[in-house]
Amino acid sequence: MINDIAIHLTGSGEDAFRIGEAAAVARTLDARLTGIYLHQLPEVLAITDPSGSAFLRRLVAQSEAEAEAAVKAADQDLRRFGLPYEVRRLDVYPRQAGEAMSNLVRQSDLFVGTRPYGDPDKAQAIEEAVLFQSGRPCLFVPPSYQRRSVCENVLLAWKNTPEAARAVADAMPLLKRAKSVVVAIVDEALGAPEEQGNAPDEDVGRYLSRHGIKADVHIIDGWTNTGAAILNEAARTAAHLIVMGAYGHSRLREWLLGGATREVLSSAPVPVLVSH
Image 1: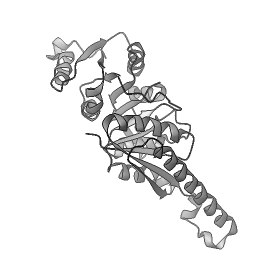
Image 2 (image 1 turned 180 degrees about the horizontal axis):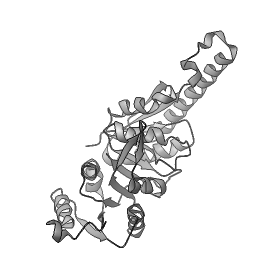
Image 3 (image 1 turned 90 degrees about the vertical axis):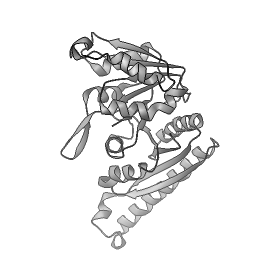
Image 4 (image 1 turned 30 degrees about the vertical axis):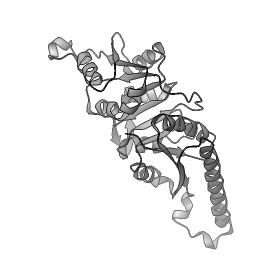
């Protein structure tokens, strides 16, 4: 169940697009909205007392004024949708931003941000941190996305992994309201289902049907790029939403997305709901 939707706010023009998409989902699911403005403090303040420098005092005042203006603008944007909402502000240093946002997002059911790698605010490190550390599903929208419609056509990119299973469970409220659900299974040449003793198309279709969801299962072959195959199927089926598991690994304490997930989140023209 999705009752509370957290929205990543940065004080940029992208806030309005994130809020608009979150509001559309909230209206569909009868959920409330929590806007989270991440105010990144000037890094120099972590090592220097600003009281002794006129320049640093001006820097603090400017940062504070920008934060107040961003929170006020977000409050106005949220109020016009007529939905229950609140705006929260996090004051953190840049190196703490991802962890702080993840900690707060755990108190919500869904996180809405701009998709990584296409984010004009260059906030992909924060968005990846929330995806991998918060334990909550993330709905990433394309930059300047304005469709804001109910997700009537949903493409579920299925692979028999824990991440994909979590994505299906997390997206269930939206899947149940969709008019069309297409399950895309990309054949990665790992052997025929008969050799493995299972039929993944029948298994996932049966699972969804037990939840009252009638889905068409498409086996996609002939592609060497799984991410590109998913995007092509999304375009072919006129999907309004892509649902998939997020795969990644860590290197030097930074989260890095795997190939198919990165491909989709780099180029998807529609929102993508991902879970890890």
